[in-house]
Image 1 (tube, rainbow, N blue to C red):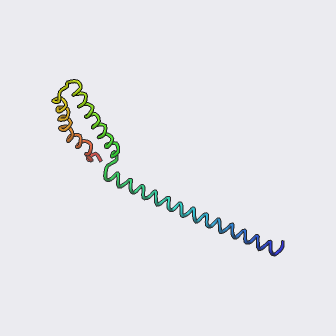
Image 2 (cartoon, one colour):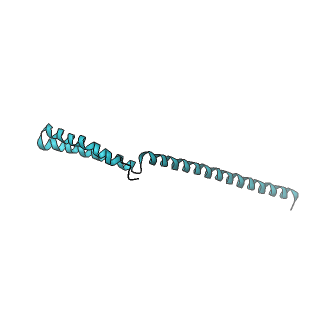
Image 3 (cartoon, rainbow, N blue to C red):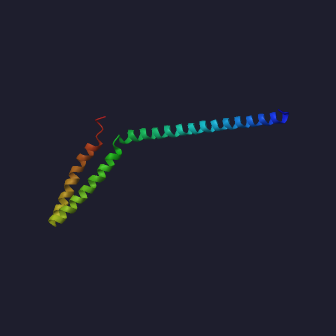
Length: 111
């Protein structure tokens, strides 16, 4: 092999090695960034669970369903009886029952 070929081959091998080192450094940097994102997301979830308890989303959906049910029951009460008193009675049942539901939903003594 001529001297020029040996130099060119050594140069190519050096370039390949540099690219491999750069690629592995990029992969290591990406893995570290991914791990940081995952740790941050996990910490955020822990804080959210600590603040709201494990059923926060379910509770919020439950309140929405309950409000929808109350509105529908008030509408049905009016359509059936044509009486605003029945609507007010239905609303009163909800207003009186709400504190009990709040205590039941947000009671954290089971933990």
